[in-house]
Amino acid sequence: MNLQEQILDKILAQFPKKSEAVEVLAEVFQVGNNAIYRRLRGETVLTPDELSMIAKRFNISIDAIIHKDTDKVFFSYAPARGRVKSFEDFLGNIFENMKPLLAMPNVSIKYATSELPFFQYCYFPEIIAFKLYTWGKNTWNFNYLRDAPFSFDLFSPLVEEMIQELLHAYLQLPSTELWNLNLLDNTLNQIEYYLESGSITQTTDALLLCDKLLALLAHLKRMTEQGKKFPVGAKTMEGRKSFQLFHNEMVDTNNTIIVETPRGQAIYSTFGNPNLLQTTDERVTAYINEWFDGIMAKSQPISNHAEKARNKYFNRLIRKVESKKARLEE
Image (cartoon, rainbow, N blue to C red; front, side, top):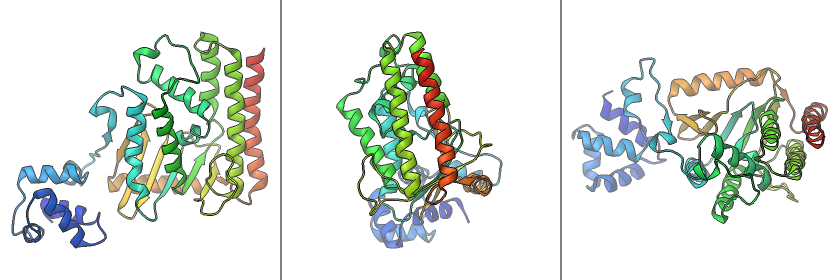
């Protein structure tokens, strides 16, 4: 199969019907449907400009096709297009990746991490405010945060709205998640560090963050009891998406996310936390799926009826937060 056939086959796979793909391609090339069918049959050869056009339009890596039998793997990395200059940049990029998933049926997520997943911070404005502050100050090096103390009123209404949109999107996608006991350690250490360094100017603010983490743990525990995703304070479980949580003491990984869709799979992995690398390379997706399933087979389920394991897991996390809070009060 030549390059043109492989690219066109990948495009056809993105549509439920061949005729729909033809309509879109005709619009892209500004030609009639018959001209597209000639390209599909190989009677008309795509020009380099046309190959470039559809590769960009349908997010297809020509390099990945050419090098599929080598050890080269190709990733996309949003910050490579330009430095993250604002919270809107970061949040907008995540939403652009999630938006197509909301329009597709039978989408699911597998999420392995040694730090609390980003979306879980969004349940409480105080916690996501603190995490974005730490990333803006240390990862993205926003000039205006260099000497600025932390504030719960750090964000514009637009940023707050984007956070809620991301949380809503996460709640629409069923997920199986794999956590360990260290997933709060980084945040707790950041709270203590910023209080000692003066970036958190009031001890009461640090203690409030600990209280919100305790409230978050209570909410997450309730979600695992139900095996469902829902916002804080939800009264009904009807129509809620699946949330299956597993615990493994030995998992030590960066955020690794497997997104499964009818069109294929994509892998996301943190690179310069919280920024993400992304690939749809079939070799990588197959390998990471096998890795994830292998870890899952050795992990303890704590959702639904696993009451004893769930209580043990969350009680240990609660003690970590309470211990840190007591230390901050000294």
